[in-house]
Amino acid sequence: MADTADDLLARARSGDRGALARLLSLVERGGPEGRAVGALTHPLGGAGYSVGITGAPGAGKSTLTNALVGQVRADEVPVAVLAIDPSSPFSGGAILGDRVRMADHTHDTGVYIRSMATRGHLGGLSLATREAIRALDATGWPWILVETVGVGQVEVEVATAADTTVVVVNPGWGDAVQANKAGLLEIADVFVINKADRPGLAETQRDLERMLDLTKVDGWRPPVVATTAPTGEGVDALWEAIRSHRAHQESAGTLQQRRSDRASEELVQILAVLLRERAVAEAGDRLAELAAEVESRALDPWTAAERLLDG
Amino acid sequence: MADTADDLLARARSGDRGALARLLSLVERGGPEGRAVGALTHPLGGAGYSVGITGAPGAGKSTLTNALVGQVRADEVPVAVLAIDPSSPFSGGAILGDRVRMADHTHDTGVYIRSMATRGHLGGLSLATREAIRALDATGWPWILVETVGVGQVEVEVATAADTTVVVVNPGWGDAVQANKAGLLEIADVFVINKADRPGLAETQRDLERMLDLTKVDGWRPPVVATTAPTGEGVDALWEAIRSHRAHQESAGTLQQRRSDRASEELVQILAVLLRERAVAEAGDRLAELAAEVESRALDPWTAAERLLDG
Image (tube, rainbow over the protein chains, first blue to last red):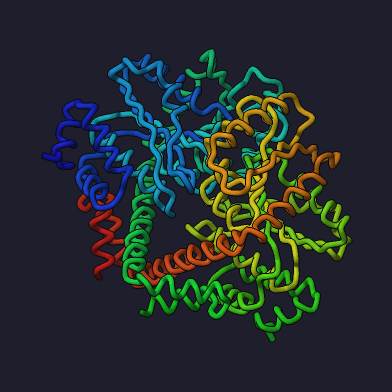
C-alpha cells in the first residue's frame, strides 16, 4: 500500500525523518502529488523562519552554511538546510558535493539536510523551493537555511523567497562590483565577505559600504560580516546579524509585508504553471505543426502562439 | 509623427544605426510594439550566426568579448554584440560597465554594441534576447555575440539560445567543478579558461578534459582554449574554435536541428507569456482577494490558482 501525502505528513510531524524525506521527494517531483503536499502543509506553517544564502559559484556557500549550522546548534535550536542544485537543462541531476560536505552533522537529530533538484521548467525551481520550505515549516523546523548554487535570475528569486537573504562575496578586486552587477546588492539583508583570510578584505568591505551608502536604506542597512568558514571565524557575527534582521523585521512589521508580497507573487507563478500545462495539453499536435511553420519562417512565433491560444 | 516599426526596420536595414537602436529599444520594452518587431524581423532572418558567451560574474567575459570583437574584425567581418544585463528584480536598471569597456570599437562601423536590460518577469529575458538576435540578423549582421552576466537558470537559457555556446571559467582549484555544478558542462560547445596567466591553468585544463572524458560526446567534443583577454593571447584560437564548431554543425546538419528545437521551445514560452497576461488581466480584483486568503492561510495557493483559472 502506498503511503498517502496525509500519512507522510502526520509521520513527519511526529519526527519520522524518512517520512519527511519522502514528503520532500513528492515536492521535488512536482505534479498533482507535489501540489497535494502544498495544500496540506500550507495551513500548518508560519512559525518557521527561512534564510536564503546566495552568491557566485565558488564563493564558499556550502562550507559557510555548514559552519552556520554548527553555530545555530550551539544555541540548541533545530535547523534544516535545503541545498538547491539547479538542474542542468539536460540531465536534471543533482550533484552530491553539498551533501558530502555536510557530513559533520549527520548524527545530530536537531539538523536536517536535503539537496533538491528540480527539472528546469520556468518557475519550477522557485515554486518547488517555496513548497519545500513550507513542508519543513509545517513539520516543526524553526530555522530553515536555503542555499542556492548560482546567482542568476531564478536563483535570486529563490534567495528572496526566504525571510532573510544573505549574499556571500569574496575579498578581491571587483567582487563587490560584480555582486552589484548581478543585482545582489538590492536583495541583500546581510552581506558576508567569506574567505576573509584572502587578500583584499579591506577593499571589498570599503566597496560594499560605499555601494550601501548610495542605496536607499529603508530602516535596515545590511551589515557586512567577514567570515572564514573553515575555521568558523566570524560565523557567530553572521548568526547575530541574521537574528538582528529577524528582530528588526518583526518589530517594524516588514516581515508580515514581505510574506504577503510573496503570497501574491507565488499565486501568479502558480497560475502561469497551470495555464501553461493546460495550453500545452490542449495544443497537442497543433504545437508541432505551428512550430514547423515558425521554423520555415512561414509564420512568426507571436502570431503562431496567438493562433494556438485562440484554438 | 512617430516612426513605425516598419519604417525603423527599413532604415536599420539600409545601415541607419539610430533606427536599429530604436528598434532594439522596442524589443527591450516588450509589449505589443516589441512583438510587432518580432513579426517583421522573423521572415528576414536566418543568415546570421549567434554565439552565446556565459560564465560566472568576474570571469572576464566583457574583456574577452571585447578582444573577440577585435579578432573578428581582423577578418573584416561585421559583428554585433548584445550584452545582456539581467535587471535586478527591484531597479530594472542596466549598468554601464560593459558599454564603457567596449569603447575600443566605438568608431568602427563594422561593430554594433548594445547593452540590454529587461524587467524580470519569467521568460522575459530569454524571449527578448531571441527577438534582439532576430532583429540584428534581419538587419544584416553576420555574427552576433551575446554576453550574459550570471550563470543561473535563465542565463543558461539565454546562452543556449545561440548557435554556439562558449563557457568561460578561470584557472584555480575548483572552478571547473563549480562550472559543472552550475550545469555549464553540458551546454558548452567551446570552453575558455580566461585569465590564463593566473596560477592553476594546467589543473583547470586537466579537470575540464577529465569531465569531458566522462560526458557523452555526440560528434563534437568541446575544445578547451586558454586566453588572456587583456593581452589578446589565445583569442585567435577561440575564434578558430567557434568557426570550427559552426562548420561542424553545418556539415553534420545539427545546426538545423538546434534551431528547430529552439523554435518549438520559444513557441511554448511565448504561449505561456500570452496566457499569463490574459489570466492576470481577467483575474483582476479576484487575484488580490485570493492572495489575501492565501496569506491568512484560509486557502492554499494551488487551490487559489485553480479557482482563478476556473473563473
